[in-house]
Image (cartoon, rainbow, N blue to C red; front, top):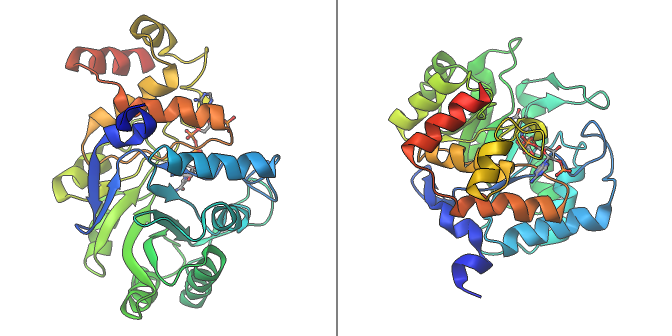
Length: 290
Ligand SMILES: NC(=O)c1ccc[n+]([C@@H]2O[C@H](COP(=O)([O-])OP(=O)(O)OC[C@H]3O[C@@H](n4cnc5c(N)ncnc54)[C@H](OP(=O)(O)O)[C@@H]3O)[C@@H](O)[C@H]2O)c1
């Protein structure tokens, strides 16, 4: 088996987060691993561990998690499956969302809470420093200076390497960059929902990593019912591979993190790294997805 077939993710190319943290562009997001509503233990604990280990075997070296996934269920699974971590594995995590039950998410950006959650992420993941810490949401009730100020203090203490934002507008990115060095932005973006195009274009101009969440529109772009199923069939690839390949071709700063709780779906998704698209195919896909 050739190296590229054994580790298909390597065909997605690389991006250097913050200029000093190289990763292969196709990553993996762990939000599908905890129980229903991202709450409690996984439906299948052993399969969750298999997914994480297989992702790394296939070449994934960017794993996206958050303290609020479970809460902490995802972080514990990552540690159980992968610690001690292979060299070069980047675990990007997030703080700033509290949980009151399944599907409930409330932002809290008070500095003492953000500090507590960074400390708990370090403990639960078994890390001495977090490579990429993303503020999950800016809390509108707390001054941005206070939220980022605490994260910069943790960075100065050596507990965080790089800082990123999530679900932000261009003006918020620029306001944050006056207070901290921002190396990544994570917004909802996929073939069928391109509302964050202006944010992506801004990130590309500024050399900031853009990490699209819901890259498969929570599964709507995958499978038989996908709006790109016919084009995928004609090309001999799966709809999910096509949706992810579209993201990879959209801009060199895009780092998709498709989520799945299944090894079979993971293996399907990572093969997107080897799918080439012409400009005409990019346009037909955009038209097909509306
Ligand atoms: N920053 C934020 O606010 C934020 C918000 C949401 C998510 N995220 C991050 O973004 C990551 C990706 O988003 P997401 O997981 O919500 O959505 P997604 O990647 O768009 O889609 C995941 C869904 O698609 C299904 N799926 C995956 N691969 C498939 C395939 N090959 N064939 C058929 N179905 C497939 C999964 O089901 P199976 O489990 O059955 O495969 C799951 O239901 C998350 O894991 C998380 O790390 C961040």
